[in-house]
Structures are given as C-alpha cells and as structure tokens.
Image (cartoon, rainbow, N blue to C red):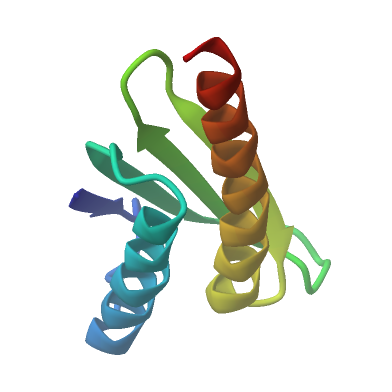
Length: 100
C-alpha cells in the first residue's frame, strides 16, 4: 500500500509519519486489496481544543473509502478514522463473500 501524507500550512514531524504508517498498515489485515491511502492533516483556526482534522482516503478496487475525524490531536483523530475504516472494510469484505 502506498501512503501519501499531505499537511498544508505546517510540517509533519517524523514520529507522526511513522505513527500514521504503522496504523494504516494494520488495515491490510482486514482487506488485502488496498491500493493507496491519502492522509490529509489540517488545523482549524478556532478557539476550540478539538481543532485537528484528519481525513483518510483509502483507494480500493471498486470505490474509495473516506473518513474524516476531528480531535485534540492528530493521533486521536487518526485512531478514530482507523476504527471507522476497519468497520467499512469488514462490511465490504462481507458483501464480496455474499456475492461470490
């Protein structure tokens, strides 16, 4: 799986990149046909503490899966996205088995 991280307006630290890569690699155990993952990290300029937005776009054969979460840290938002994508991938796999 090819992982592409984009963060407009700020530089991403190496440990965050490693964290993202490690978490996304775990998704391959649920669905092995993932082609690529695009991760978008954004900081919203608000007074709220939950201003970090993480958006993950998974490219899989058929159609893409998307998840967007907001949290206090990018790590927490990414974890929420991974959980959501995990459910979506499991659902997709079940549908494929039903049609096979």
